[in-house]
Amino acid sequence: MSDLAALFAAAPVARLGTGKPVFHCGDRVRDVIFVQSGAVALRRVLSEGATLTLQIAEGGALLAEASLFAERYHCDAVVRTDAELRRIRKGAFLAALAGHPDTLMALFAASATEVRAQRARVEILRMKRLSDRLDAWLALQGPPGPGGWAEVADAIGVTPAALYRERAKRRRMGGTPK
Amino acid sequence: MSDLAALFAAAPVARLGTGKPVFHCGDRVRDVIFVQSGAVALRRVLSEGATLTLQIAEGGALLAEASLFAERYHCDAVVRTDAELRRIRKGAFLAALAGHPDTLMALFAASATEVRAQRARVEILRMKRLSDRLDAWLALQGPPGPGGWAEVADAIGVTPAALYRERAKRRRMGGTPK
Image 1 (cartoon, rainbow over the protein chains, first blue to last red):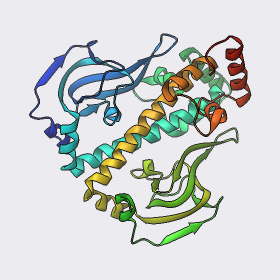
Image 2: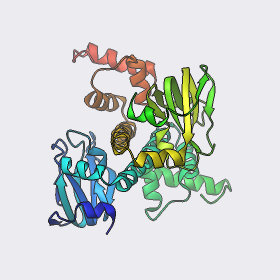
Image 3: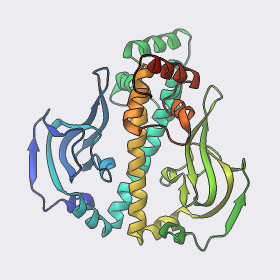
């Protein structure tokens, strides 16, 4: 059991099926939720009606740890893959954490890494041209992961069709097979 | 003296004038740098040649704390206002921090807040229409701070002129004086 999981060992397990809500945007942040298994997505509904996935919390991680110090959630949490969750009160968690500096350090490290990742996304989204966004993304992340090019399109804020056209153009121009 | 400042009390003070570089993009992250007074900007030069300010670290803060767990810096640091800096080795800092859980908790809290702020920026920049970006920004941040509308334009990735036109349009349409 990880050090983080150990802090939740005494809490009961709640089982939630795919698609079930865990919390809603605007709810007060009372508890800290640990994802023991499965996956939970943090989402926001954009003004155009589309849904933006902010983060996927998988087994072994806290859910919405960025909200630990906030009054209310700024997003919805929805089970993405049948999940087992444990929750404890935020105050009790923070008090316990102060006695586990290694766990606290690991959370800080993960958060610092996330800050860098999000700042890189901001930089990319500020670029006007799709080709600049793609270059920047490839320079930072390397070739696409298991999510493939659809995930890249989502990350750089362009449509899959527009990204496909750009890649086709690059192949025609005899560039590297990006 | 803050708990954080105390960790740097034994380190010598370096004084750097406005415009001086502190580190460069690609440099190895060896030290942790504490800004005792003045201000240091983290910047990246974009592909179009423009400069993007990622963060301003002012007196009492760490510089580039998001890079603490990274191998190399992803940005440049430049003194923005005459600064006094103290630096210690990263390893020594992290070891000392483990013995100061309150300070570590404060750093984690600041980092978590920054994650939320950056995610909000990502959301806004993904919106296509300037009016949607402005609405989202105002809903999240309220009226502009001391940086005024120029800072808002920068944050939501539009030109000051385009933002001015949008605001003029809203005034003409008799909306709230945004």
